[in-house]
Amino acid sequence: MNVFVAGASGAIGRPLIAELVRRGHTVTGMTRSDAGAKALTALGAAVARISAFDAPAVERALRESRAEVVIDELTSLPQHPSELAAALPGDRKLRLEGGGNLHRAARACGVRRYIQQASGFFIRQGSGLADELEGMAIDASPGVAASARTYTELESRTLNAPDIEGVALRYGFFYGPGTWYSPEGAAADQVRRREVSIIGAGEGVWSWIHIEDAALATAAALTIPPGVYHIVDDDPSPVSRWLPAFARSVGAPEPPRITEQQAREAAGEDAVYYGTKLRGASNAKAKKTFGFAPRPLEWFQG
Image (tube, rainbow, N blue to C red):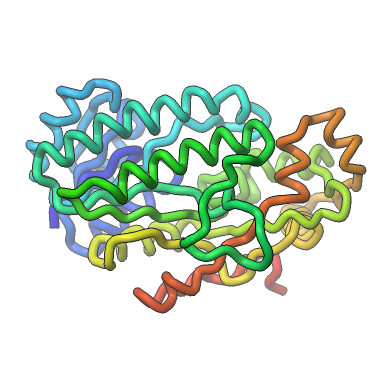
C-alpha cells in the first residue's frame, strides 16, 4: 500500500515509518529538515521536503507518491514542557491550516483513507473512563479548552468528509524513546529537579501510550473500520500514582505536594486541570476491533 506520512520526523513519525516499511508498505515521509530527511531515507522511506503551509507543494507531493492512505501526525511542540503554552498557537496553526492543506490535497488526489492524530486525554469530564462517544473538554481551563477545540475541529474535518474514509486516533500521553517521558527526556529532568508536584489529591487521571505501541496501532489503522479509537494504555492512572512511580523509575526524589491554590498562583489554571481534573480513556473499542494490546506502563513494573 502507498502511504504518505506528514510529521514523519517527529516522535511518533520515525517508529511509525519503520513499522510501515517493515510491513511492506511503500512510504513517503514529509519533513522540512535535513536531519529528518536523512533519518527517513535511512528507514527506507521516500522523502517529501515541503512545508504543510505550501498547499500546491503538498498536493504535488501527494500525487507523486500515489498515496492510498494519508497519516496526519503534524505537530509543532517544543523540546521542553515548560515551553508548551507559548508553542500552542503555532501548533494549532500547523494542525488546522497545514493539516487543512493536507486534507484538501488528499481529497483532491483521490486518497482512500485519512488517519488523524487526536487526543485521548482532553476528554470531557465525567464518571469512569470515557469511551469514543465522549467529546472533548471544550469548557475546561483556558489552555486545555483551546486544545480541546483544536482536536474537536480535527476530528470533525476527518470524520465528516463524504468522499474519504476518516480515522481519528486519540492517543494517550506519549512515553518512551524520543518523548518527554523517557529517562533522557525533559519531563524526567523536571522531576529530578522536583519541579513537578502532586497538586491537591492528585486525582487527575492520565492515559498513556508507549510511542512504539502508538506506531503499531497507527499501522493497523490502515485497514480498520473508519471512526474514532482510543489508543491508550490499559490502566489510566491518577497523578498521585503515576508521578511517584515515574520519579522512582528515573532516579528522582519523591515529588513535592502542593495545594490547588498554590499551583494556581504558581502555574495557572491549566496546571490545576492537568493535576486534578483530566479524565482517563477506555481502550476497549480498539482491543475488540483490531486486537490492540498495549504494554503495561513500565514505571509500575517491578
